[in-house]
Length: 211
Image 1 (cartoon, one colour):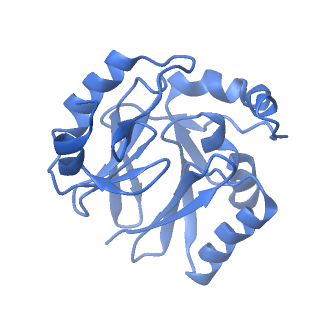
Image 2 (cartoon, rainbow, N blue to C red):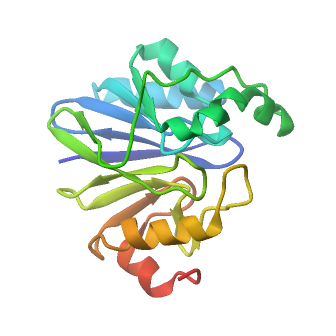
């Protein structure tokens, strides 16, 4: 059984997730902690639950989702995985941070790259990787069938979709990818987004105004 813990970090109110199972191993997804108190909240949770971080993952690499990656790599020395198509966003992260008035340390580059169909393993658990481009070229989601959830980053929100006016964004590509990759999942599948509340696939199919 996977436990999903989420934190709301940085000025963009970004959702950072820690996924753990009964073995105590965990993965950290979209680490957006920018301030020291946010870093301490994340560490305190890991210590209190006696967890062992084994991987750092990104659904995509916009600045609000990678702000804490340097901190995590320094603290835990774990493997970092993302999609290669978003590497250009990591390369320009410091400049993007400055645009918003943030002094961001250069995020690390991934140790390896994920593609559609990959399986990410930790403890006794698996996450299936789907490529869902359009918000960014390298946007991916992490699906767990056994626990009926999908962690989607900024691809899909409750009542909305990810913005497509940033570099590499494409509205038609995003809508098609959501329909082909996400809306084929069971309606009861929980959707954990990069901002805002949790929703379900069925709810978004029924009520999301973009579809």
